[in-house]
Image 1: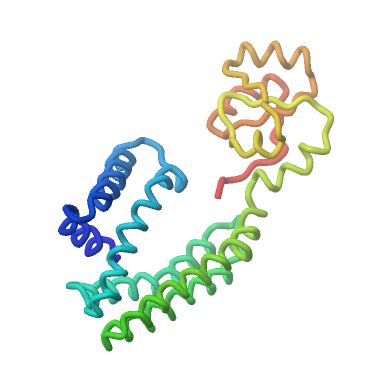
Image 2: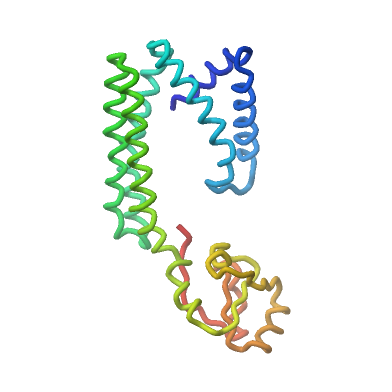
Length: 239
């Protein structure tokens, strides 16, 4: 939420610090490109994150050096507080209404740390204690990030269809193939390429050669495969 002010400040200082302009351009290219892209995963825009961090870091440094709140800082702090309070509530209900992970809805409590950091940060901003405000924001995000990485995400990923089906697949000696499209995590976890079958005709040939074939696919591609003798052993929704 502090990024708009950070971008404005970096744009104003682009002449004396040309690298800031370069960082802004990099971020804009990624934002525009993935705004019109048909598919996007969280990792896709990751290369522009360091450049955004430079812009934001410059903004924070200028605040600390001048010891003055830059225009709109308190408003950004208030918006961050609203978002931080909403996150654990939204997270709770999102987990509750997904049958696959509803038992883990209590894990959303860890997001409350962001709320505490946002409250402290806004108070320090109002008091013009800028260094304490920065420490409050950074500290709460660092703690939350570590808890999400080592506490929450492992539990969520254990409910992923890939994780749930891998033990049976790894312990089987049957040939494994994919049909049209499947989760790329299977290939990663198996540690080897998996032969992909792109048509029903090719699949018929493979079934004759390997009657006990294990087939990995998506539900949208399963229509018409019953006549080949396939049955669904396990299925689930990607998290």
